[in-house]
Length: 317
Image (cartoon, rainbow, N blue to C red; front, side, top):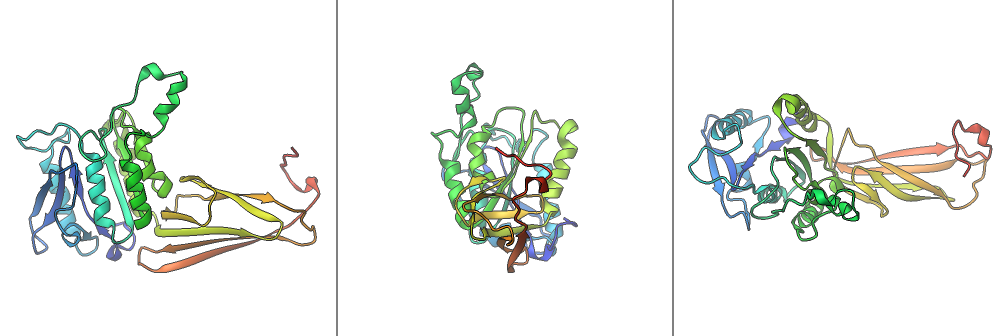
């Protein structure tokens, strides 16, 4: 937490889950004992506490956040099960994700979703579709596509898109979790998917640590709208990035960070004059972690030539 940029403007909330969703809050005062609140309605999940009780400012509430992390370490055993005589069968990861998104709906932000097992109970539950008999057949491609019977993550993606919320998925799994069905809520909105499989702490623990560190400390902006324009005779065909390929403009993303790259393709629609440069402008409208709305504009003037020898590499076809 000491390395998170703009800590006075950054709030953190912590939610855990197994077959129920657990919310952590603290009593009044800097030394208040952390409390655990259970939400067991995983079919229709909701936040049992107001946002002010679940979110903690990184600068002013560092002690409370550290106490909650210590509480989690003592509350769950090494397998991730809650130390309770109650049954902990199944994973309600979809319900936990939905409640986290609901907490952030009033303002943009980012969810770090740690997944160890396929969501199998409650909202967003999925079935294991990893059928080895489909390998090397025409039907194998269906395993790489969303489960058409589960629209929960597409619905969450729509909510995230409207609220400008990004979801970064940390898949620490030893079995299939149907990433194809989960992906719509992450990558298309500017989120990122980290995949560690088969996960074990000896092999992936250090990498997971530094991936989370980088995710939390790299410079990130929110509520992105970007558009490229060009001079007469050229046109923008499509935009490409971690979100895939988009034809429409402007491109809308929930977040954009220092590790992301955006590309776009140009098409020549008419003959260009060699004595006049071609112009390209790329504008990005975004909100900083301090809540400031800014615009950044890149302008380029490109030399136009009809001599292929002026290029080091050129595809004449």
